Image: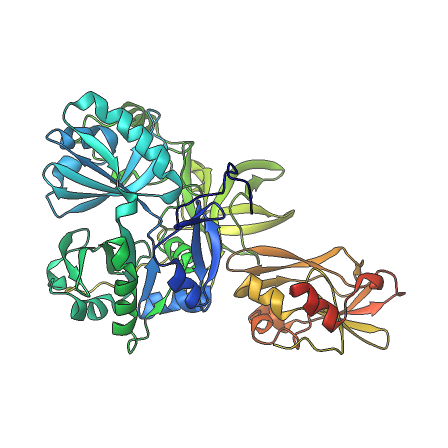
Length: 386
Length: 124
């Protein structure tokens, strides 16, 4: 036993060894998941293996526990004005029931976090933020809303379990479990209803490059919903999938990972995410700096590459010209689905055009890579699923 | 998966099987489980020297890269070229998948090697 004032002692049953547990922790252990510390949480990194889980999501579907994600709600008669200040998209343009990818920025136009904004009601927004940033974001947001009158922020992370169902079979797996007509939910919209008789909000959002749903449920219903999804998906070959596959899937889809690809030193424009900026929103923090950077042009840009030489370029490896470091790899892996080594790196703008060759220092060996357009993987879309 | 007793093991989870003056070197089942799906194995050239306890190459899974440590001193006599196109063999059959064959020069460095029972005892 440790002493009572040791930092990792907690009476909270959802905390052990200083790590928080999601409501599905016992289920993951029973499923023989490999559990790892991630952003202060004990999370499943893989069940059967990253490659097989990755392939299941691309060809069938996978179920992810993403309950570690933070939820911050902003409500009040001035909630919209508060949101216009806090995030760099244009949340005033969202209708109730609609969501958008956005950024929480510093005054320099760099990322405090990236997030999805859900407009629950005209005066009520839900922000889903990265687990590692929840406390920082909440403190920042609480400070910002003070100046906009009637708007309050609450950290409601513990009120939600979040389960992501991703892959082409998602709709056929989920539809038998809910009265919500899933065909009516367009991408980046959501609906309230029930899943496996549990109260749920079903959002057509995700982080894998596949069609699918993120399902918000009360924590005590998480296991019931998890089991129901796997049962419903059994004949379709649906499997539980861990953070390892989530990372390789998001990288194939060129979705940025906070702490790897974007952080407080990288601007929205440098990250190649200019499309997320709502220039019609004149109130957001960081706007002036981004306007200036847009006018002058960026000097470096987050760029996709494929390895030409053998090897995998990983986070933190240098992009070099001769002996001189000129950039840095932010993410890299051998992708299961595309079967090649890919990655993203910040490189000087004159090296960021598709077709350019860059050199990467892989633990002392210089390896050539080719700049390619992003995303690396784009799912086939049909007219029905939009 | 059993750990065969026809060979020795390192604390870094390599195995070494000596026949005459040639030692086959691979990684253990425990190691491949920890790594997860192996996607890339970087091995030395034939003729290069390896030193017990020193890195002779690297192995990459989807998740991470790890160093490979030589259990013995010697000269690389052969490398398993099939691992270039089929690195997943390390996951499927770790104890039959040798990575390099080393022509052993002297017994130096072999003192720290564990037998099967000792290795399994270490894994707990």
